[in-house]
Length: 238
Length: 272
Image 1 (spheres, rainbow over the protein chains, first blue to last red):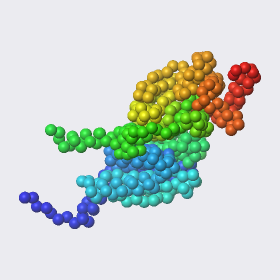
Image 2 (image 1 turned 180 degrees about the vertical axis):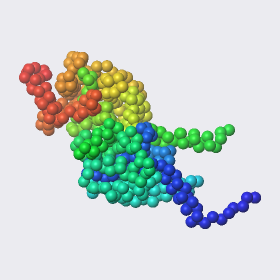
Image 3 (image 1 turned 90 degrees about the horizontal axis):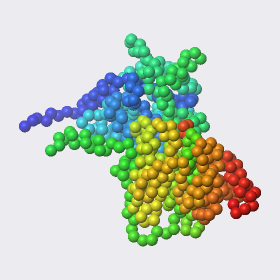
Image 4 (image 1 turned 180 degrees about the horizontal axis):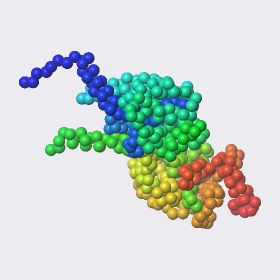
């Protein structure tokens, strides 16, 4: 008969957390910044089709780092949750807070009950009518949830990126400023300096006034490489 | 015998769907507007939505609906809207039992948006038309009990760069229509008007005028279709879909056109 060894719960949790952290640290970072035009979501991602950033609902966006299959299933679950809620109640009743708490519960359940925890970190962003009404939530692999103000950085070099964004963040910049700040933050503390440009970035925005500027309730808009280049160029010259 | 691992993969694949309707059927079937069995008994009078016209014009398609819903011989609503944007490049118009039709439209809108968000790309126009057909077929048991919904679907096919029209029957049969089409109680009269007034390569403005004329004729002879209401200033709801997407024609524009149609017909001093 095989012998069952005793492992303390503290040790189990610590091992699981270390395992998840290691997985997340291997990936590239993602930055979410709230600014005057709305919320910019910027990820270092060489693939043009396997997205780390996605649309959840009218005013809600999603960004993730870690294992693709895990955060993709969470993204799809989030879209389903939001669409069912909006369909059965009303579009206004879908909020980032509700979504974030569902994410927190499922991440927490997976962390304690499953064979292995999810190696992911998520950000849920909701754009409001003013910058003060923006909501940013950061969710970690164990189901912890944090209400962030202004910006979120996640992924491999999260701390360095977070510090770089914090140093340069101003609430009244536009998308051009926010995206170029994200770009420089993603390159922070890396040697040799990576050649980051429109081609290996994935950029999406949540427009603050999508109703008036585009005539659409859905604020999420993915920026094409050309648009990113234009925005970065404008920031460089102006 | 299956390997357990293959079982899991099979279950994961089976649970993955890009369709919102399928997801609801799996997890919340009570939320679907159709798919429930009704007890025997006579259905009391319920609001019915009526005439919808649609036509092609140079560079796109147009869909228009009157504003009346009837309940037996009563007018249930003078303000109802029966033409809705389905997504950026398509519109849907509904005739039949209003309560179910409005929910079915909402479900169809979410269905298209859900697919777009899950897959990251828009459904093809054919795909959208087929999905709508499947939903109408889902409503067949209710249709047999007197709660039929008959939609008209129009959209801009971005791949072929043309506007296209689809009509349906209660069994979910899908038929592509050329030039123009009309559904609902006043459709016979509207069709007659369309046959005389429609010609190839109408401009958008001309097409709007033709749709208002056709709805006027439908309202003139069908008591369930509402004409332009100059007292309450209610005009038909008109959407156009072109390369740039679906657009709701502004109320002011429709007021001008509707008043011109009414004036044009009164000045003749004949039987309209």
